[in-house]
Amino acid sequence: MHRAGFFIAVRAHRHVVSPKLPNFARNFAPTFARTFVPTCARNFALSPYELAVGLRYTRARKGSGRNTFISFISLMSMAGIALGVAALIVVLSVMNGFQQELRNRILAVASHIEIQGMPQLEDWPKVAAIARQNSRVVGAAPYVLGQAMLVAGDANRGALVRGIDPALEDSVADIGRHMRRGTLADLAPGAFGIVLGGELARGLGVMPGDSVVVITPAGTITPAGTLPRMKSFRVVGIFEVGMYEFDSGLALINIEDAKKLYRLDGVTGVRLKLDDLYAAPLVARDLWQKMPVAADVRDWTRNHANFFRAVQIEKRVMFIILTLIVAVAAFNIVSAQVMVVTDKQADIAILRTLGASPLSIMAIFIVQGALIGIIGTAIGVLGGILLALNIDTVVPFLERLLNTQFLDKSVYYISDLPSDLQRGDVTTIAAIALGLALIATIYPAWKAARVNPADALRYE
Image (cartoon, rainbow, N blue to C red; front, side, top):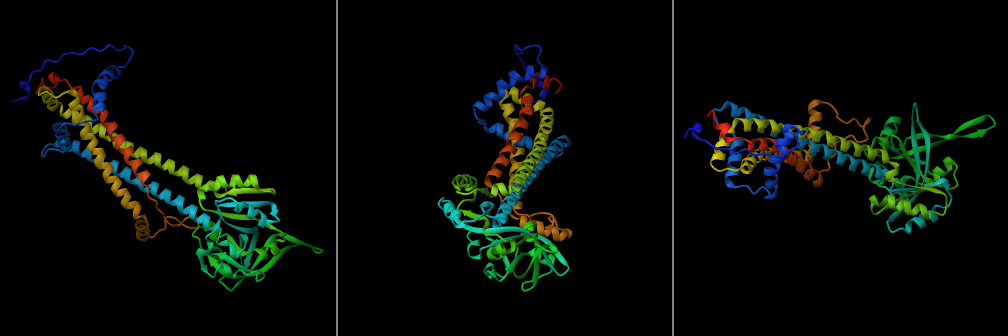
């Protein structure tokens, strides 16, 4: 039967709305309350025909140029959502990986808590014993810290020199696991041995067995004037933790040799290791109240707060930026849906004459828009997870292909690209993408529900 044969008597609905409101608000409010709210109330319990028609409208009919164009726009919206979701998952996974790797590498050299004397601790065993009374503390070791200039031949480098007790160092840090040459046990007291970071050793051009001269800032006063304090050390080991700051600027010596070099009676402080690194702020606050001497108690979150704060801020900014990409792709659904509603007005009118309610019409177009969002989100989640789990393979391949290095270790703290995929991030991203897609379907579906069958079929 020809569409023009349908005749419908449409009763006008009058709503009392303030005349100062714009036409959109005056028309949208009652219709929204009449159609969308009941839809939410029944939890979108779709009937089979609503689902079937909604799925049918998602596909373009062959030979129909206009429908093919609308389907192309829908496909691009779907691809945009998929790309945005995948990018969000990969970027957040990499940011999580950076945060975790940065923390692990810092704590491989640093400690969870440092109790630093003011200016030094005379009786460090007493301080360590008080710290061990806290059940969270599992290790304690003294240290001496100072600055020095290292000279080998014509090369010289500035570095931090840390005096350690080789027997206790493994109880507070993991630097022993990162030794490339030699061991920490080679730092015997009185032997004046030194362990250098890998980049520092390469800068000085030395290997185990070579000698380096350590020059301290504090000089020795003589009748001829102030002379720099110098001591020759023999390189006994090389470590690499993979963090340029430490590999290029840290040297380890025995704590007794450090006391002699810096002429100290005590130690700079005591380093502590906890059974839970995230409990460090609470434990540090508790120990500060119990210290019998003047001391500064600092935990790793304070010592390296700028690093972790910068990573966290960067993660939030990237999340917002990439979410906007997903939002743009999701709201492209609006244009595609409005074109579908315009193209299908006659079909909507016929459905209305056959008994379809405005609620059913709205559900049909919500199904169509939601399907675009669901498929795009599913593809994006799958692609993002696969890429995040294989980032350590993909990035080296691209570096070899392009003959470049994305993260120069002389510039960045971490030279590789780590990834830490977290279920909570994936769930949040998928929920946001689906939510934006569903929101984008509301206006076109509302427009479809307001189609007047008599007007739509008048010229058919």
